[in-house]
Image (cartoon, rainbow, N blue to C red; front, side, top):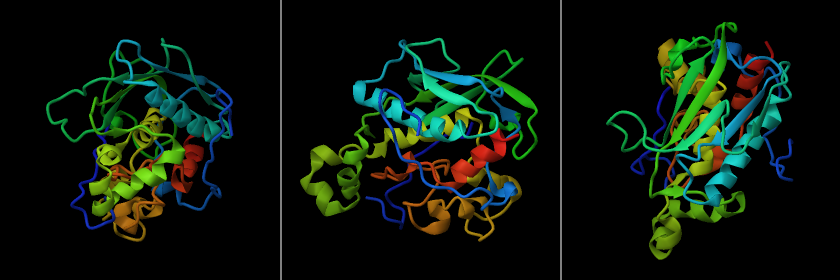
Length: 275
């Protein structure tokens, strides 16, 4: 699975419902069929129709505190809210500890080049005997051919995670400005958003591609008007952080907009799970 990395502050861009535990969260409106099928990030792997996909935080690799757990709950709610509207009528729920279909681990990632990597998702299809980070085992934009069996999501232990609630993100995003950052060192020490990363990785657990990966496969520049990245409004194509899909590959420093599912994410889910 493609690794997720934070975008460098050297970029020229601005850098600086279902109910779980009584909680509801907004999801961006999406009109079905507004994006061509071949520009959406669906794959040939799906969870079985009607299955309740369980998610648990691995007690062997616990979160640093309850705020991280709260952000996981919210990410689950966001995906469940759209997934249950699909023809396959899947749901996503959190269960205590595990075992679970999707196991969340707060632990170091595999490999050595992990300094800038935020998280990685490991897939296991039915019939497989091991996990893989190669999303290519689920060919992109092909009819359903493989049923999912299990997923592991590893979140890298870091000192720069922001795990604040939604109502704290607007103030934290002000850290993109150097003057604000200089006078708010406590608030601005954290640079990358934990909740955006979790929402993104749960999309990979549903076996969705990055739009940028589709463009690499199709040999199309992300800045072209007909690229998947442009359709997903990724910052590389739009020069704006705010409207981009959660499945866009990178994450901006002091940015939390990828907590929200956008049109590209929702239409990708329907293209996959309406089969």
